[in-house]
Image (cartoon, rainbow, N blue to C red):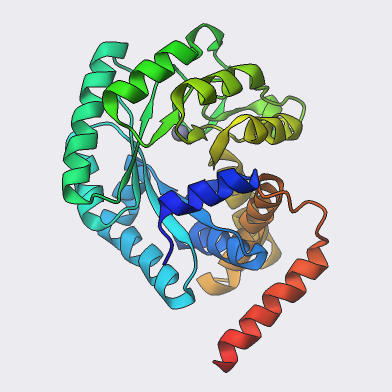
Length: 310
Ligand SMILES: [Zn+2]
């Protein structure tokens, strides 16, 4: 089975990015995994501290491992935004493939020192684990914000990126390049899109020389995402868009079947609603936008038939 490190290398060589989707439950996990399987592209499942607390650290690790093994499929698990060493260690011991150690709220020097300690501690548990560090400010909370803060003065500089990567030894870097966690109401309604500083992505990539992650990808302009991938982004995080789709799908399922109480008759509406977003994002990240949906559906059903036969 491929490791996450190889998957990122292959993606970079192919000029594509690996989609990272946060999950809080089996509905979203199912939507993420089935979409990636349908399009036959690798995928990263993310679970933040809050999401891990809800699902159980070892429980989500076991679910993702069971999918990877049963389907021999490159699905990986990331401990998203881990703010302290203790929970980073718990995730590493549970078998997560990567950890985002996020001390970005601290001043640069302290962030660098703590991240370096985290890299050492986590690699001692699992030498193959990837550790991601974060510098700059990209806001908090993958939810709908009434006001979007002006984060333009907290963008990452190429010099900081280089210094941070060299000092900490992180495998992956999350810079601030115009991205932001969460979406404004206008973004949810499609009236406004986030815009990225593409030139800055290129400069940071050239200075840092490690894979770069774009956090807070929800609501970002499609063309900016394509250009950011070309400029050096290897992983793109999508969370808020899935949360909006999850709620819409759930409401549709409840409205369509008044009086229905069987969860597996209601929840497929949410799986489908989330899946539509995941597939659209994976197509964009993997340059599959020209592949007609029907063709990929046929390919996927052939895969399923083969699996049923074997
Ligand atoms: Zn994030």
